Image (cartoon, rainbow, N blue to C red; front, side):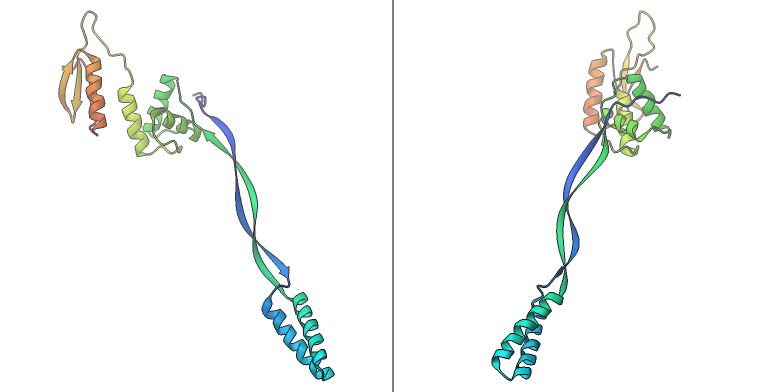
Length: 198
């Protein structure tokens, strides 16, 4: 079996975001500098016995503590990340779409991209996963798809609308039956159009 062509396209999408990183910097820790200045001042006073020695000791002690202290800071940088994404599109080949829907509804497989194209075409979220919502939308799509009924030559076909296994209305005007079906669908009622029911 041939693989159906994809309707959508692949695109590169990029985004820039700020990401944190850790960096170690020298100096700047006030507690270490103050502690170094105090210890330097005490040693300077003890060594010289003068207040000037204490001042010089405090300056030297603070400078040494500032030079020897390190701390970790959090900074941010902009990083661009790009990825390939599939952008689904409408499938215009009605028979190929119908075959894909029937295959998926019966548990068959298709590529994720093909599933996204089918979902996009039938009007359901196109995430590439064929779940209950996709099945429901596919069935509604198939019910509304034009089907050529088998009609005896010379006879006008009789269209019947069935709800919960009960025929509620019949008419030879397919458009009126289709309008009723659409109104029922919008109201949340599932129905089926039958042709020439005996």
